[in-house]
Length: 276
Image 1 (spheres, rainbow, N blue to C red):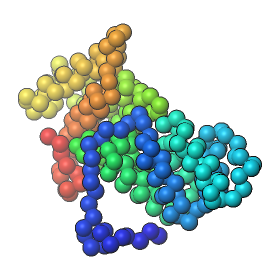
Image 2 (image 1 turned 120 degrees about the vertical axis):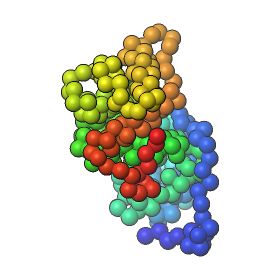
Image 3 (image 1 turned 90 degrees about the vertical axis):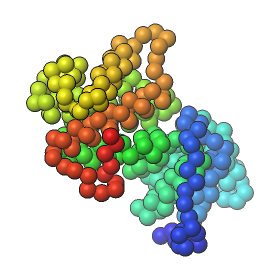
């Protein structure tokens, strides 16, 4: 098990959370840090070469037989020259090759690097997924817990699918994320209203007080935007990543409110924030 360093033991450590500036990229620093974090687990360059070669489908160089410096240099070249999304594939493959404790330690190291260097990815359950700002992260984590409590598995699946679409590499599925997040909100709104067949657009008209005024206008605006951008897309008018992220965040927040309303739960901890 990895031991905490001095700053963590003495309570001086805090993440230097940088604004997210990196998504469709794997910076040079990250490519080098992967090797460092892997070797810190008492692993050898030959171990990493085996993983990288498999992911990149590049046979190992038979002329390189010593770990240092030959195989280490070979691995360095692989990591430096591969396409950006392959770097994240290698990270996932590394985690799959480790035992439980090593995987946890490696995950912690990489996640800290992501946060401190403004990289919009995170490792969760062994997979590299999209990471948003703190408000976004709180929204999506809270809604999954609330939907679980409210026994709404379909809605929970839809919001998770929205996150998967945002996490797709090399290109996120923007329209898919918008559609799945809207489906989540629609599922919850149907349960709250008791109308199991109506679309969200119909529910807004029939049940205008599903959320307190004037917040009800938010649902109407989300419905209008997603209908235009997620369902009836026009040539040259495709939504971008930030717009999709905003829709996911808003639908998660409203679904959290409705899920709590349905299950009769109230805020019970600091980790269960209501975002209205």
